[in-house]
Length: 167
Image 1: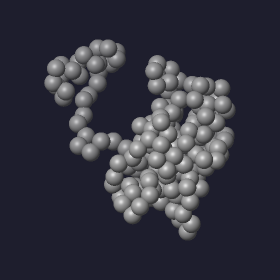
Image 2: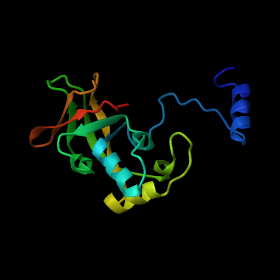
Image 3: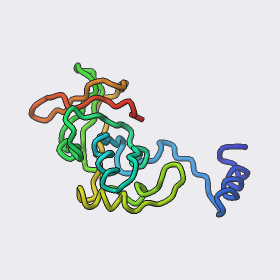
Image 4: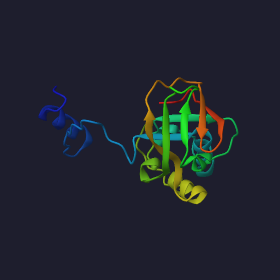
């Protein structure tokens, strides 16, 4: 079947149980910014507070980091800084532009789509509805699992390592 053909739309609609429309988006779709980053400690804390098994897929990040100091919601402090992935003047980097205000999508189980409202309630009560950060690419390059990540503002220091669950 053609990816954007009527036959595929009809088959998906049949399986879904309602009509669907296939759209082609030239540059993809982003919630709010081009890069979403979340720390594994934040995901684990939300899982603990909501009584759910932590599942990073609920948060749809581009990058998952493992922090050197386990502090959930530490990403809030990164806003206004620059994350550099690796060392050197040519290291890929993003400017951290804003906290990631979460919506009801985090409630949906990635495997079954079953809603669990306790997840968003945990984000709201623990961190005023924020989990992770958004950023804008300032230098392109390759990210590697396990590489050091540096946060630059006034001081440059090692913050984390790219997690093996990075996406």
